[in-house]
Amino acid sequence: MRKLNEYIKLVMLVVLATFASCTPTPRDVQQSDELPPIYPDYCDVTIPENIAPLNFLLRAECEAIQVQTGDITINAKGNEVTFDMSEWKELMEKNAGKELTVSVTALINDQWIEYKPFTWTIVKDKIDPYLTYRLIEPDYEIFNRLQIQQRCVENFNVNAIGHYEQLGNRCMNCHTFAHQDPQLSMMYVRGDGGGAILNQNGTLSKLNIPGSVYFCFSPSGRYITYSTQKIIPAFHSVASKRLEVYDATSNVYVADMQEHRIISSPLLCDSLKFETFPTFSPDGKYIYYCSADTVSLPQDIQKLQYCLVRIPFDEQTGTIGTEIEEVIQLADVSQQHTKQSVCHPRISPDGRYLLYTVADYGTFPIWHPEADLQMMDLQTGAIDTLAIVNSEKSDTYHSWSSNSRWFVFASKRDDGLYGKPYFCYIDKNGKAHKPFCLPQKHPTFYDNNLKSFNAPELGKGKVPFDANDVAKVMKQEAIPFK
Image (cartoon, rainbow, N blue to C red; front, side, top):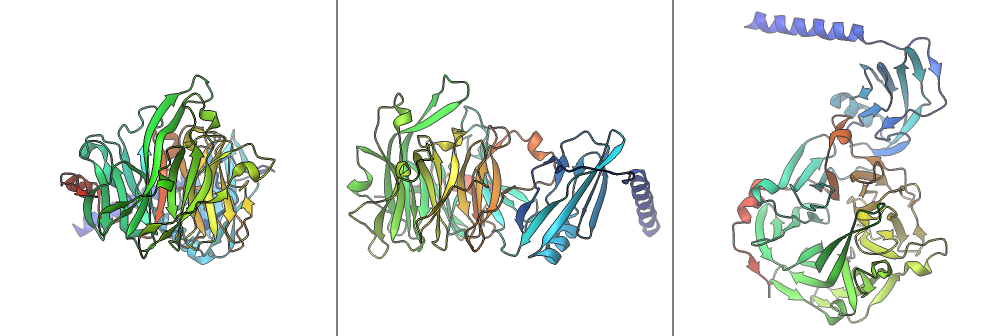
């Protein structure tokens, strides 16, 4: 047996050597002053030292490719570049806090072409290592074959924490962490027998919190603020727009997870207002949410304009304040903007920055190609339009990393249809850097993937449950709230 194993190893070495000898290497190289057309676009991006390998392909019919960066040289046939995991980790560790130059040379039509080199700026500010998201088909069957997955962004490991096959093809709402903590999180399973699935240190329970759509934990974890909506999908007759989704009604509440009671206020359930997208401030003193005057829907959908407001909240007594304060009214921000509606407010864990989405109108920007991200400095009131972050397509739904240096968002910048997770670095001076797409093991993954990555959320660790656990708890009676 030992001799057989040695023989197999020898054969493998011969095969690898033969393959390597058949891979062309650059000679008579022609210089190009253009950046290489790589996909995903990883040219001149800022990345955390703990990110998975940035595997990519060259959008060209090339016979062979060579990539050089740091101590790594890759020679490969075809147009795909895949880094060895251990070599990549060593490269990141050795160059943390530095810039790496990346050189790409390709054999195209029997001519070696060396493209203009680009850089990877590797920062020591790590990103939270886990990402949860919904995998959803970007068509009119909104929740067909839906999954909620968790991916480790430091490698390519992925597992399902909610799966349509185990839940009767039900719609599952996004999975949200409490302060990026994997030991406290929640997701919502809709339909008959559904409910909010609460994770507390791996123990799951089903809660009867009717109509919960968007929600956020308070700093102590005792409370969640959430919105209830009657969501209506409508089809556009204009070819450039596929679908519109709006709220027929929407209100904001607070749920006490300890005493199982619902806390309400007439200010958050105004029949003349739409209230949605609530989130606690990191200190728990305010509930930020979006508010709009009611209009006749769907005919006046373009008049539906949301502003950002906040209302005080006392975690000690579990009481909602009595005065609403306006935070952002986009019509007053800049004469250069035509975007009038704000949604999805998220405050960085350090309390410094408020990140939100703006669109021309409405409350469902994922279907609005003009949707962009903006960021307010809560200390100065200054607003950054994040020009380096946004694209010509929808850029929306975002969440922060626990160190407030990174955020992830969903972007449809490639084709306007499929959303993908992009990561953006915010440095200590509040400057945003060019975002990069979630790396995949196979460079052609996104070309072959027929699902959108929806509602991405960053977490500090792996959640202590999986899809099987969710399926089991769904069979239990829901804990009622009064």
